[in-house]
Image 1 (cartoon, rainbow, N blue to C red):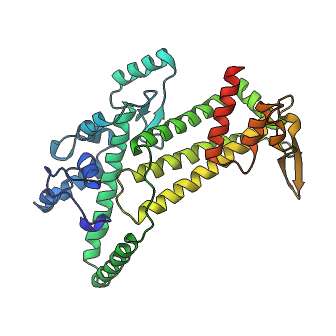
Image 2: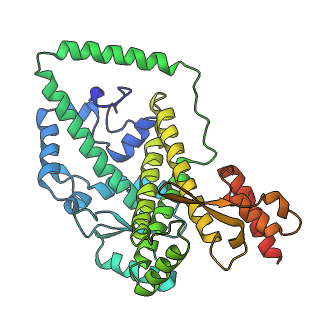
Image 3: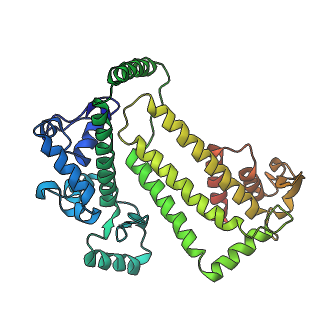
Length: 363
């Protein structure tokens, strides 16, 4: 069991409250503790057999040996999570790829409709706070048993001694690197708050994709994209692929944030933070490019401030004038051009957006 986790720390018994990552293990997988697992060989085998032969619906309400189900195990932890801003839900009606799909109600009628569906299908429609922990519980359990099986099979291999030496060398390397001065800066907000915001952004992107299936909305979006394209050749597929790409990007951001939740490994933390930073930077540049195309539409405040540059087979938009020339004569245009400028990073963009919003509010 210690070989399946990075730091080698596992729960001593079912009453172990744990600290750090062990506290999360207590919430998601309390039956994976040394006292119970080493009691009899059948304890481990019964739970492994139950997970393999039982569908996920039944696992929600029932555990091995008629024990508590996944929802009952995680209910206490779910009550400690802050409620989502828009009261989202998750759908578990399909055991396929849509298992755990997020949904967000629109207005009072939409919320009431989801509440009625939840009453009719209590195992199929679940509030988002419970759904997050339910998926974590089932995913963590699957990973735990998968790694345990690998470790058990490794006990029979002839190269077990070499593997132990290799693990000891890796542990010494990890300890040495952990003592380096590369320490990640602490996040200003809690992991749970950032995770909820990222999930809401992902759900909003999925809602945009659903709206694009409406013929009227799709026709308007296609026309807008076509009129603002930098290429001379019409692009009849770029819109849909871009919509799907946004969802995938925010799904990846959500997964990276979830990996940081409770992570105490000093070696993994800076790597995941760097990957998260790189992904957010790519999403920021994508959003900036989309905004630049929107502002180049004719007629518009900034439509005459852009020109097209073609290099080889690629065309892109460039700003004609320096934004500083409009600081006094046209502050709105000045703010828009600053947002479109390639040198404006995410911190500067937040300031220019606030200034643009304040100006629009006053006028």
